[in-house]
Amino acid sequence: METERASKSSKWFSNKGLRLSLHRRRSKSSSTSSSPNSPMSPCTPKKDSTKEDELREVFRCFDSDGDGRISALELRAYFGSIGEYMSHEEAQLAINDLDADQDNLLDFQDFLRLMKREANDNTDDLKMAFEMFEMEKGSGFITPKGLQRMLRRLGDAKSYDECVAMIQVFDIDGNGVLDFYEFNQMMA
Image 1 (cartoon, rainbow, N blue to C red):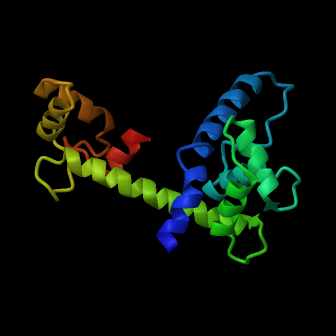
Image 2: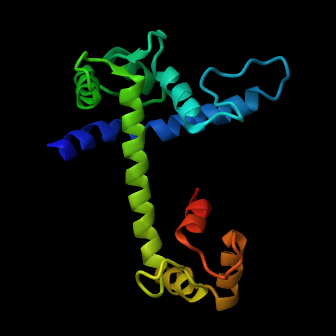
């Protein structure tokens, strides 16, 4: 039941609109904030902000009336503003799936739980991708040979030396291989 509920709400909050809209908002803010007199967008994270501060800014993009809660109407309006149609029923279902206190509104804590769940899903996907590049399964490292083998399978044949050079770009500790942290940084 929980998995079914998560997939309904994730349809709207994961790959579809949220990331697209954040990218658009950042792109707009970087092009408009070049002037010293232009105000920052209320949805633009500050450079020294924490992850929670950034999520609070994203939450404010949804919370158009500023009451600290996201209603079905605000959810529809937000997705409509980025070109995604969402019916009232779909909006209410998404809220009901995430609403811990059953008041038919999403507060910031509900929103945080959703974002943590999405982050965990993304990490799982990244781990699966990482494992595909490991030459020796379970080793925890991507070697130049493993990278070369997987690239060849994907139709992008590279020489061993090219794979060494690709790994060196993201090899933070200089050991000649990529661990999961380095792979994660490369994919970010």
